[in-house]
Amino acid sequence: MLSFSGSSDAPTRDKVIANFDARAKFPKDDYQILITTEVLSEGVNLHRSNMVINYDIPWNPTRLMQRSGRINRVDTKFDTIYTFNFFPTTQSDSQIKLTEAAEAKIQSFIEMLGNDARLLTEGEEIKSHDLFTRLTSRKTITGEDETEQSELKYLQVIRNIRDKEPDLFEKIKRLPKKARTARTNESGDNNLLTYFRKGKLQKFYLAQNRSTRELDFFSATKQLEVDKDTQRQFIPQDYYHLLDMNKKAFQLATTEEAPQIKMKGGRDTATFVLKFLKSNQIKHFQGYTEDDEFYIKQVIKLVEEGGLPKQTTKTLQKELSKESNPLKILGILKKNIPLEFFKETMAEGAAQTSGPREVILSEYLIGK
Image 1: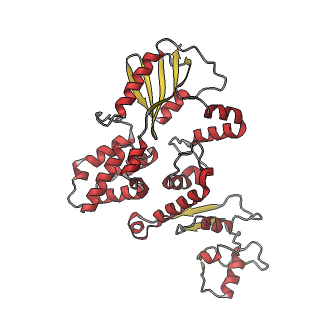
Image 2 (image 1 turned 90 degrees about the vertical axis):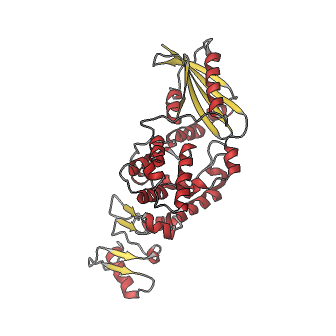
Image 3 (image 1 turned 135 degrees about the vertical axis):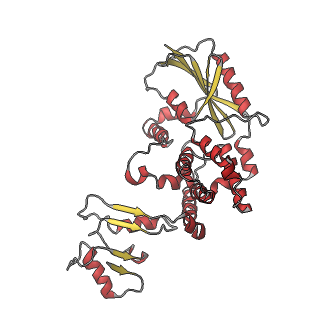
């Protein structure tokens, strides 16, 4: 094992080159492991190796690219390059704030990129914790698909239309509000799917016979997703009746005095997290400090308002279900819920749902 830092001398540097640079004039095989600081991230090629292990995550993410660039050279003999990143434990991260700093740096990159980072609307928000999660996801690192569905799939569809079919993209952008259509439904049932918006709040409702139910984003997109050549059908007479049912459901959900609508039970990960945190063992644990108690209340409110992404609640469900120690549970929450989720002001929160209720589009699904 060989180590190199800013205080190392020229002979040590020569050893590094001889053992790890594929272009060395006099190559040697005295060392297989090199431990070094940032000093070798530029200027020295190390492509006799094919693995980089980062024991720290720099504030500037480009440094990680520079490190990998030392071994990922054009004339490397390896087909595969491996990079492993070590993140700090919950306890140490609470002291050094490394993950938080990395997320903040990524946010500054987003701000510098400006509107080019926005895809759908001028007001679209791109969260730093969102990008950080995507950058460290299994798909990003390994190319393998997550079991969890992602909006990125549909964003890619929109990108493809924008880049390859600009006329169609322009037509979609100019669709008037309250747009409606109809098509046959393979399930055999007649129902109406309506997409509503109020401020930045967006909801989908499906009306059928005498009942209406809310759909999540993925359920709605599965209903709406069809082949490009699908034939449009005439809209049946009961369209307005079903639309009125969906409107009433949306109005009820967006009225402040309305009773709280229960989340779906069973498989809903947010429901599990909420019930877990509201249990007496967790919520009323006497070992919490006042700050801890306030933090737990904040998390509960966040889950109740639907402020956590589905991937986050899924991760929390997996980790919380294995733990019963309240203090360790507190650590799990702080590890998986970025601080950005708690920074929204009351004015910003009100702005999320301010404005008129709008019908964006409806699709009547005609049963066969």
